[in-house]
Amino acid sequence: MKVTVVGAGAVGATCADNIVRKELAEELVLVDIKEGVAEGKALDLTQTASLLGFDTRVVGSTNDYTKTANSDVVVITSGIPRKPGMTREELIGTNARIVEEVCKNLLLHSPDAIIVVISNPMDTMTYLALKSTGLPKHRIIGMGGILDSARFKCYLQKELNCAQSDLHAVVIGGHGDTTMIPLTRLATLNSKPISELLSADKLKQVAADTMVGGATLTKLLGTSAWYAPGAAGAALVESIVRNERKVFPCCVYLEGEYGQSDICMGVPVVISKNGWESIIDYKLNAEEQEAFNKSAEAVRSMNKVLDTLVAHN
Figure 1: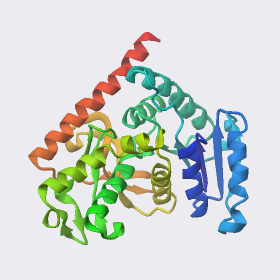
Figure 2: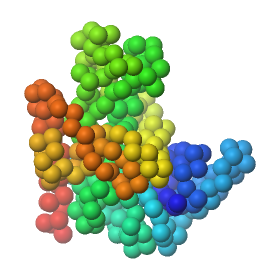
Figure 3: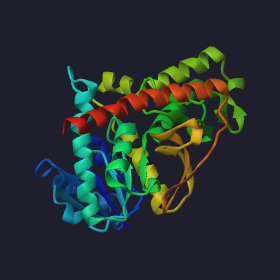
């Protein structure tokens, strides 16, 4: 088993750290465009092997994709964060070029790889990865919903003073502050509906806190978060390489499911060695379906920027 993580920044390095700690691969390759960064972090990780007890071989590469050859799973974290004064179109334009080039280079050497997308804006980058590569839809997976759901559980745990592992709480929809949909109606604590444990107002506040979970951390840290995003990416890789068939909310290509087509959005899917196998239908009520449709409109508006970029090139 061989896993490649493209982008050796905070998220990519944390994802790699989680992967080697769990010994999910015989070899892990870190790739970065900045000279020496991937090699340095690979060496740093290798020096933890005797302390943490793993045998995974860690390799670093400055833009040399030959070292990624025959990867089974590839995680893409490449791209830049949005900077002050930068328009949404500029962010999409820059990251789209990066993600498209990364996918092209990866598939030259690993044509059978499953691709996990973490780069932002994630729904649009997942859609781009699918359309630009022409790969079967089951081999392209956006990670966002796993992270959003972990944040949902975090805020529920703070209110309930319970173990997060006892919570079932899922976020679907787009991976954005205004597009994600915490499914409060379906959230449970050991099968007991959360709506029986928290007031409607408190549940609304938890949902609101979840939706701005990333922005809250950016405000506190002055940059994007990395521990939870990295761990979420590794959890997805684990379900693939160990064929766990876990149900995770992930950004995948829809063809009529949840009332949407020709779009990548977060829905619950079964994750296995083949990528994502099937979509689970949660039977949304009218209010939830309306929210999902509005989320889809917002994601489509982001995707249209890609069409504009293609038309200009």
